[in-house]
Length: 264
Image (cartoon, rainbow, N blue to C red; front, side, top):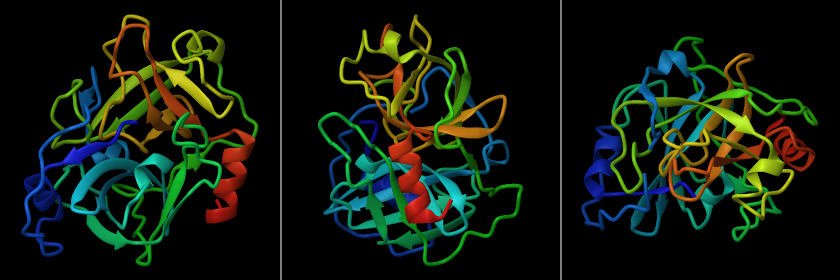
């Protein structure tokens, strides 16, 4: 899982002046890291990117997501477990300001999501206030077609505000990293429970990866601009021999469900 527990002061910064920040204090413990081995970028280069702050009891977690239509954000199912409310920011390169923010308590996980194996790790957040799609800082991402394949060595771009090292701090600015996909046969040497609804991407020597706080964010083909995957899980962040694992958008059980719940 690549979620990240947000300290209260960061949650307040995220909310900025949009809503009243709660006054109670919570732990600053983190579950891990952000994009590792990548580069700072801007929302104009990744206008489909969304940032999610998830309220769970008295704790707040960070995840990523992608705009798949003006009313729907695609994310990972594990980001939505036990959540009561989601704060969604779009159209900004900054984690705590800019763009627009909306609040939603209308979200759902894939009914077959398995928390133990991370199979069917996909969910959607529905927005009551539509996102204004301006084509510059906000844009709908095209999703992979059902049944389409991903050749090993396909370069994907992964973006988010997660940590830049394992057990590190989240980023204030949007980050991105480019990593090649690896075959599922090769990846099963590292993750024996890998299913056909997953794919892996990373470099053999490590050093480049998505990380905690990037969960639910998009993995997009560099050449086509089509979203192929959703950040799901991994063993640590950017470790040698352990690529990141992504939900495969094009797999039948995933793509059909997305179509059913979003119309996309």
